[in-house]
Length: 157
Image (cartoon, rainbow, N blue to C red; front, top):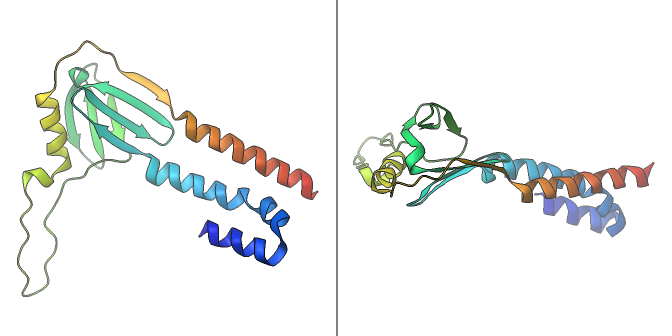
């Protein structure tokens, strides 16, 4: 949609005006990306990485004491700290059925929480610590968009 708006602006008023308008829909697109797509949970044999908005937390399985599901995925560390995950697996439930339809079977392998617990159970124990960092790529894109927006405002006034 942002691309369609920018192409329309370029066709109707020229490339220069489209470049002055571009930061605003791109800032909205950036916010949608960070909130909806960028937040996720990735697990492998060494640990689990959680990204909530712009914050990243990597936890080795040896530091994870519990993986639960409340309103969202919650990972409890051995020091009692709870990491709540914005993006991540959810418990699978059978779907509602219309009359005359056959019930679907939900297997353990379809359940994302069970998959994380299985990886935790099969993990090698290490003495690594929890690492916290920022998503510098997304922060850099935000800074560039804000500078672009400030330049657009300065040029139009």
